[in-house]
Image (cartoon, rainbow, N blue to C red; front, side, top):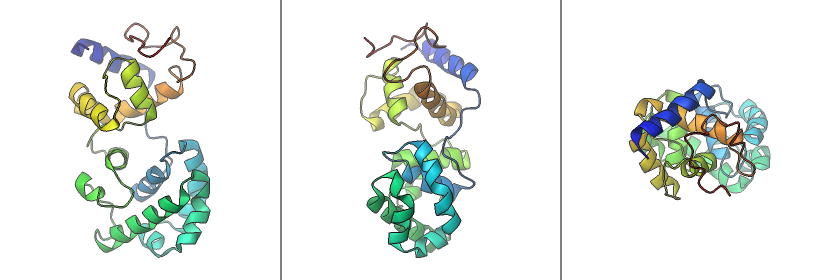
Length: 210
């Protein structure tokens, strides 16, 4: 895809979603980290309904590190995979407390030493928590739309991100993934995209759409 077409996609998305931001509700970086870990294989809506009770009981890493594992499991059960997620929250909180002095690292490599944190989660935390553009978050919506728009032929999220960071200006990395997610939840949904009413209609090759 020519650079001018990519620029056109960015411009159209900015008109539709100028203030696109993280859908996970949080008041600080610790809450964002927890919510992002819980969002694996779970909708943001369900996570947002689950976290208030969790944060009320365990508001920071020190409290979460001392929490009984069974209690964390009970509180996060609606998000699915609650055994592994609870262990990730507890172990990550322990490391944040013991190694990083209770502060969520602002470094991607350090973040990824926390249990339950891979590249995608680190990008979310750094981007929406600290405003640091460390990469582009590739979730199911971004993966689907990146292919549909002809931005990449790759199917692996890591490879998709590698392609996107070369095409999208770094200043737009954080915003871009949130904008695509909103677009994927709206007119460009998976089952019945509204191509006629889509702001990207003239730029989109509609790959994968029959």
